[in-house]
Amino acid sequence: MKRFVLGICISVCMVLAIGAQTLHAEEMYKIEVLQVANVRPFKLCFDGFMQELAKNGLVQGKNVTVRRTVIDFDIEKGGVWSKVGVLLRIKSEAQRIAGVKPDLVLTIGTPATKYAKDTIIQAGIPLVFASVAFPQSAGCKSLTEAGKGFTGATLYMSVNDALKIVKLAFPKANVMGIIYSDDDNAVAHVEEAKKYGPPLGIQIIAKQVAKSDPIGPSAEELIAKGVKGFIVPLDTYYGLRGEQPSHDIGDISRKKNIPVVSFIYAKTPGAIFYVGSDFQLNGVLAARQAVKILKEGAKPESLPILRQEDLMIMVDVAQLKAMGVELPMEILKIAKPL
Image 1 (spheres, rainbow, N blue to C red):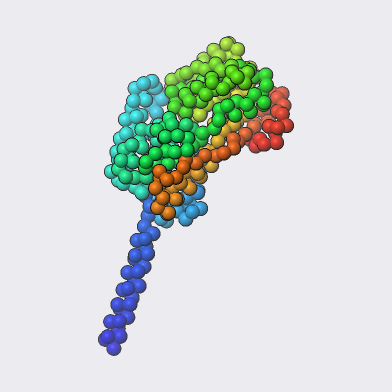
Image 2: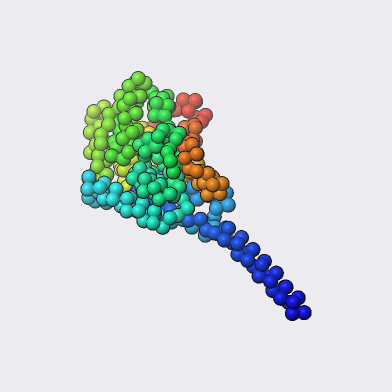
């Protein structure tokens, strides 16, 4: 009898041990998220990332813990010292992350990716980036290949194609103004717009501002120079201060009855026409990379950079009607109403 009871006890212990091993096999994955600037498009990206993880069985609080760090600009000080401070914060956070050794790091945006990746990759931690418009600006080898230890999903769109759509939608807007900051994505957008605009019959007049500058004076200056519309580039400047720059440029453009076109495919106060890549979908694509790394053991460098193939168009129908603008049928067929 004693042997029988002992046998049962041993069996129970073995079952418990197997159960413990199973629980251990499903141990929480640790993911660190790092971004610069608390702007709405980045939240859309993060939400898409988390939702796609959950669809693939990686659920926050169940088998995944996610720590998200958002580094804000000191917009009151602005200027070069603020930028230096942000870079130091990124590097400091990268060192902290390397020390805690999560299973994966998601960087949202070009600055977080560009200035954190080396420290994290050298610590042997897989890194996935999102909301990067120009991968080479973040240190990638090309548009499709990141490099050793990391991969991601890019917001890249052909500015040439985007300007063709703008030209089709607003044929009379042959002089477009761009107000932008030193944001890497914005600088790249301006450079490409200046390159591809003139062959399409679109003159680009650009004005760079500091992150803390109001947009009104620059907008009035460009209107005085003859701009017939504004382009909002991918630039965190527009999301700061409660999106005040976006509101202000919208107010000014409505008074002058000129369109504001956003290359940020997320509802932007003041814009009436949007063309670009979807931030939430970008987060979804980044999550698919993360799933392959965490659940399938893929090496980041083996995964090509993902991107949305087709540009998306969204229009504010009410504002267009108020301005008396009628879009071509080619645009209306594919545009999503706001």
